[in-house]
Image 1: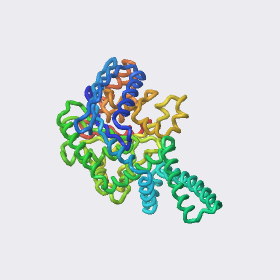
Image 2 (image 1 turned 90 degrees about the vertical axis):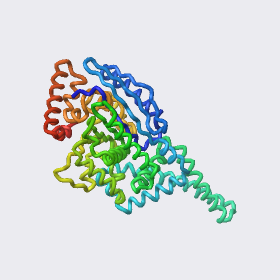
Image 3 (image 1 turned 135 degrees about the vertical axis):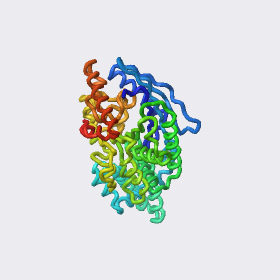
Image 4 (image 1 turned 60 degrees about the horizontal axis):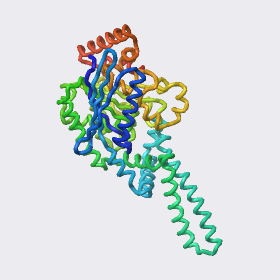
Amino acid sequence: MRVQHRHIIYIQGYDPRGLAQYYRMFRTELRKFGRLYQLQATISRPKVAPDDEIASWTIDTKADDWQTRTAYDFLRFEDFIQQDLASPTWRTVLNAVWIYWRLVFSGTIGRFGKANWRFATFITYPHLMLLLEAAGAGATAFVFEKGLNALGIPNVFSIAIAVALFVALLGIVLKYTENATYVLYLLSDTIWTWEFSHRERPDWDQRIDRFAQHLVKTAKSTDAEEIVIVGHSSGSFLSTEMLARALKLDPALGRHGPRIVLLTIGGNFPIVGYHAASKEFREHLRMLAVEPSIDWIDCQARKDVMNFYQFDPIASHGIDVGAARRNPTIVPVRFRDVIRPEHYEKFRWQFFRVHFQFVMANERPNAYDFFMIVCGPVPLSARMALPDAALDVATGDSSARERAWKSIESATAAAKNAADLTKLEPTARRIG
């Protein structure tokens, strides 16, 4: 099957930038994608639903021997995130520190470290920065208090003034270094994931339920050949939640209409799934692990400290479904292979930039290419199963493209006849 019409449903992670900035980034990266592969890609203006929860646009992509049309839905949470970030600094700091130490004493941080020490270091980083900034503010306040004592100011007043100075200095430092350190943003993220895991954010749950209804409606009405649900970063567990809830609304969701593929990229499932309170989330993972009508592909990159690399979202949560398991296919991605060598050494130390490479244009042709996933003619499951053939479709000469299509169509037909698309999966683990 060659995809001519695809429907993307993209779920943002905990990113306050929202629609306007995401759309500008997407449009810019789409142009880079077109230049890299020497093809034409045009994008419409976004249309926002009356409730402001979903924005949609279309992309028309044309190469020498294929053409696709992509409907793109951007599911929005930035209003909730911006409200979180508007919380008073003192409340954010106290709440985040309290939650972090609960994570430490419950052993959850230790489990993060066992699963991926880089992520455990990353989640600890804002607390270390907070400690350093508090130490600097505290030292300044201490010196000031001693100076007041030397002037004969009574201790009760000098201490009160020093405490007030400490609080004010720490607030100022946190505010004016935020663009460099991201401490308050990361602390807010910690608070949110804790509250979401413990079902203390009904606003988020209600919106996810509405997004699940949107997915069910889309699957029944679209003429696309495939629906790809994309969850990036925290969107990884939000997308699994949405899909699982949609399957509860319509158990035949993946059995009528287009093939449905869940693509999680740069995921961090444990920040929800490792909490004892997240039983329902783990049950949703179990459901998706055995669902034969859904393909789930999880892409991970070692250089991304914000995702869990070499992590099995099912087994690592203590879920054992035996021989019934068919999801997810775990695909390692090497960013070294998609970034030009002259840029890579600088790129690798820009941690947020690395994390967002999953949804940005490649600098070098590669089997993993977000915009080829969105705009290309190869079905996603086949792309991940036969990466060399998928790359030949994009970059090969006419004879190479013809051989690649024969390989893809033969493998897809064989898997379809066997009624088991997992037969496509083994080679996907070798990508990159």
